[in-house]
Length: 100
Image 1: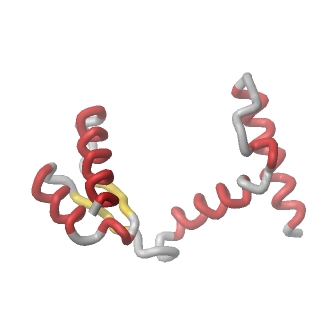
Image 2 (image 1 turned 30 degrees about the vertical axis):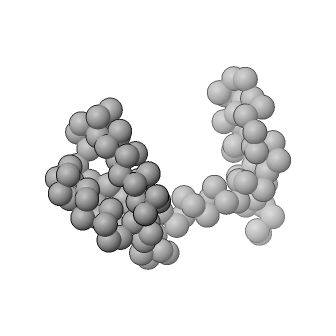
Image 3 (image 1 turned 90 degrees about the vertical axis):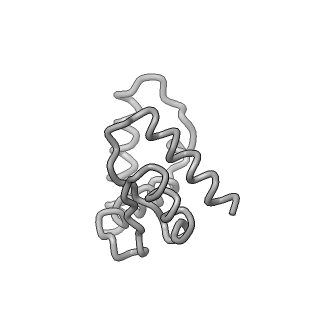
């Protein structure tokens, strides 16, 4: 129940900040009362992810999981955004080369 209430509060907060939001994406854990409450309270639709069926979402999650293996990216060590972007790209290149 706490999991659902936190999700509802976060959704209401997001709606206040961005009133143009029309639909939300949620994990399978938010089925049931969350889905009903968001539909009834905010009149917004909710798309429930059914795991790996959502191809693009899986690609993004897998990419971030690979990047978590880079020690340099584990914390925000970079001061400038261009150096942070360069480290991000280097980490992806390193990951791809290991998989060849």
